[in-house]
Image (cartoon, rainbow, N blue to C red; front, side, top):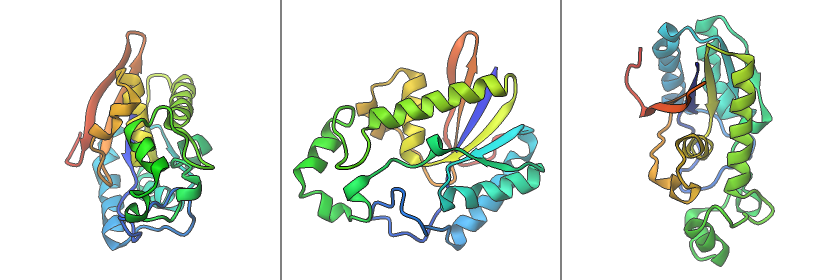
Length: 199
């Protein structure tokens, strides 16, 4: 059995009413830096064998304290990156709510493409493929994955057999940990959005 600790990056200084997407220069704020340090302490008993991260700064900055306390290097993986939000990158939710494409996307995420961006099905396919590949590389180990809220929702929905259009019902907070276990008997979700001590 391979256990994946899916960690949403810690809090950032980016405005919560805007879409960051793959925008560069979004860093952890002071609260986020503290959350990242606490994650490192919380995960120490887990005996993490490897740490993988989205290439975006906010994820890397969250992964660094975990890696430091575990004595591991952070390995960056493109498929763990945030949803590619195309034309909506940097837009506010107030601006988006008046756009027909946004309304269609929120109502039917599985089939509506973000303008010049991804569909959520594409996001789900890449993160699921990544986890299945990493499972083969780390059989029987615990692996930390630092990524983004919607990417975690896509992974959980896939392995739980939940339609992606219902993924917004899954709460994924900053610096939370969700656990997916993959074994011969199939997948199991053993934790969702955990923000307290795990081990």
